[in-house]
Length: 248
Image 1 (cartoon, rainbow, N blue to C red):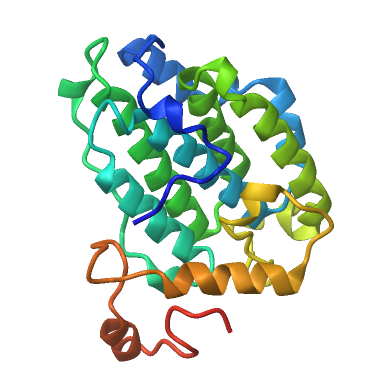
Image 2: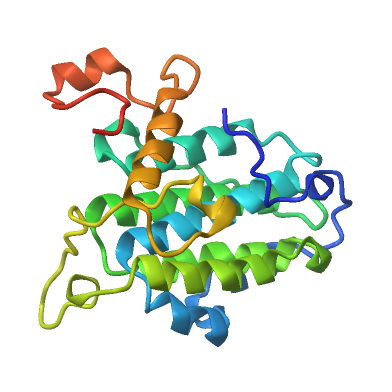
């Protein structure tokens, strides 16, 4: 199970639900037209895997914000599997989520939790398929955090620093902004951004440190503990090559 990153203040998990949330707000946050311009423009400077990693990191903030208000075990398990899929898509099972309208009443923390689960579902689907919408999905993840996280937790300053550092380490290239009728973005050659990197936001990129961070993360996973991770014997049966849950 994921542990709270050091950059997320511990106290936000016990902070009362002071942000407004209802079905109308949920729909507005799902509208890419409402992503702040200061956020949308810098996202275009970041490559596909960098955007995906940022989106997951933002939803982690949301998960820890809700941890003292509702059960976020399932959300954290899905996030952990989505992080693993950044290294190898076969590691994660389907992350589709069944939506319920019953949780969208004002003041119910299960409403924003559901929105976070939907963000993970959508980002993971887009990532698997190489769809063009990654800027939009990452932007919506960040917008959910901006709405929910208390200003004095410094989420926005962290987000701005992360965008700048990602633009340096993972600049968008031609593959991220294809011309013509290209339907799928091939992000396979891009270096995945480790979850641990968001602790320090270090630049320039340190490939050896990134590999070591990923290896620590992957070695700490357990498919028996996380129902969204694919077991090792299944991966082998499906023809997976390379070391299982290790960074080659």
